[in-house]
Image 1 (cartoon, one colour):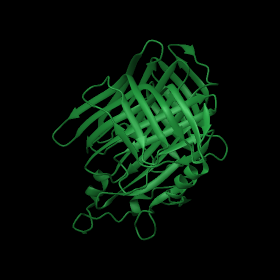
Image 2 (tube, rainbow, N blue to C red):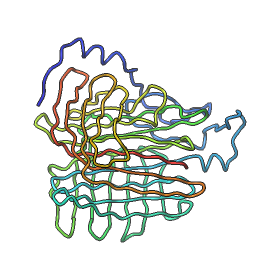
Image 3 (cartoon, one colour):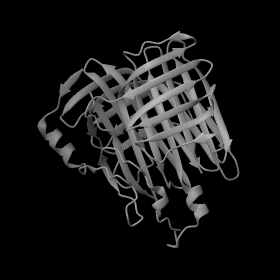
Image 4 (tube, rainbow, N blue to C red):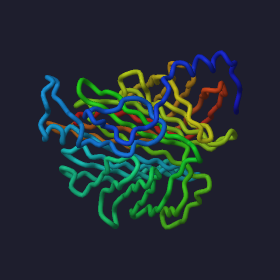
Amino acid sequence: MQLKFDKQHDVGNVMQHKQPQLAPDKLINTNGQPVFGIFDGIVDSLNVNQFAYSTVMDKPASAMAKHFDFKQFQFVSIITPHYIIALAIADIRYVANGFCYLYDIKTNKLTQTQWLTPFGFGCQLSDSPKHGRAEIGRKHKGIVIDIVDGQWQVEINLAEIQAHLRIQPTPLSLPISLCTPTGYNGWTYTQKHNGLAVTGQLTIHHEPQPLQYALAGYDFSAGFMRRETSWRWASINAQTDDGVIGLNLAAGVNETGQTENVMWINGERHLLGGAQFDFNRHSQQDVWHITTNDGNVDLHFRPLNQRSEKLNLIWLKNNFRQYIGYFSGVICDNNGNQYRLTNQLGLTEDHFAKW
């Protein structure tokens, strides 16, 4: 259901966001420093090799520190009328890991495959958000993400899932892409896009799946992140009476007032304010309350199932929970239009990492 706010709300909301700039070809400039800001378009290359990485004492960092302090991951989620599929590939230098899970909406059953390899063996990632390949696993038990001129393609070869998919935005739809400082001497580049159409072939349990109502979202994140970091995240890809709605909200990664919070209404991007996540991580059945400080998001999330992972080593720690559940509430775009969601399936995440 779409309603209308008065124009005063609209004007106030637009003015609080810094205007995006055109995406640079290379994220690291000729001075060896990242270009910060929110971008229109996709960065061609992160150009990490040219980054003048320094210690917290302003001394040049060693080549080993520069290698091991760089982290990168890619993620894709796909929702169909019957299933949710999510897959991720991450290279945190000491190890590489990946997962792919299948969630059956009708039965509330989640099955998964995961990979963990030391020092990135058997894993490949590209430092270009516009071109390149990410893969983990073997030919007959693995996942692949190809990016061709900014368009994402997904290949899944598992016992229960076989997929050759393209995820495509509507014409002129822009992702959220931004680079922000992280800690004293780092930076994080994030690029996400939701509400994307899905084409190709998808077979689950040897049954071909229709894709005309399928939607997808992706996440490309990389940078010199904090040694200890955590975030909360929410994502929606929805077919509604008002068309296709995509939503991405996060708190905990971008530290400087610039946020990756955004909604897409039929492909049109609308920037949002800072997000707050009110929930009890020690009670997995409790309802989450998710809002933004510009008043444009007021949602409740009821978890149904989750994928969780805990890794507790001397040098590395990972406490990961990604929830599948129902969103209900109201979101408002930058034009003052309000959209009401009722029991809309989507994802949230609560994550701590020491890497």
